[in-house]
Image (cartoon, rainbow, N blue to C red; front, side, top):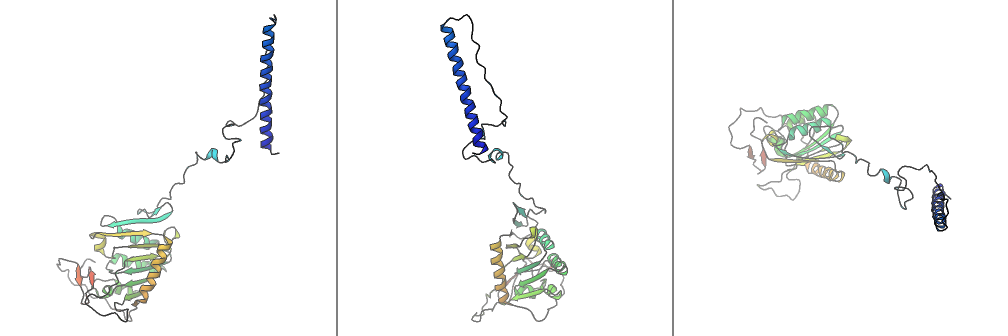
Length: 291
């Protein structure tokens, strides 16, 4: 028999003894009163002490009671892991955030992730004219980060495109081929590589991160355009983006020669930063001197 059962049995026996003693005392008093005895009978006093917890009877000997139940209400819920960055990337131990430009500091958030990267960066971009991001990528490459870039043809031919600069710095660059399909018929509206995403190999919390949305790597995108970005560490989502990145590489080619960027011309007064190529591809910021 367990100690608990023994203790329970003792408790019931003592309770029965107390009830019996009380009943006996009441019977004696009744008889004495009927006999009109001049002497009053003294009540039988019976007491005992038990060394039991203060919460005895509230949590003990309850069928199905868990020993941890007494502290369940006092337990505090784990506090969410706070972000160590001003961009609040981290929430409840996960990386998830949404940015909108020009309302949020989208460019600074991107620069922060580039600085935090410890392994690799894969970039698919339609337009790339932001010199600050280019400098951050060069710094990352110099500290040993592997960087692959897939760009639309406009990034190479554009006057303010930074892809030629990155090519000169030894980056692994792929240029999308609009005629990657053998049976693709050339037309005015040619195929373009319109993706805008980055895959970080090991970043915040030592996790892989995907950065995606409408945001092009241009100064107009973060300073005046209405753009969006979502940042996630979801493994399944990142895996699909990584697979598509390899598909895009197969649909691209590596330039054999590095084309030197043309010297920037004096700033032109233009009403729009959108231009149309001969193939019908729309390029952003090609005439933007401040890029």
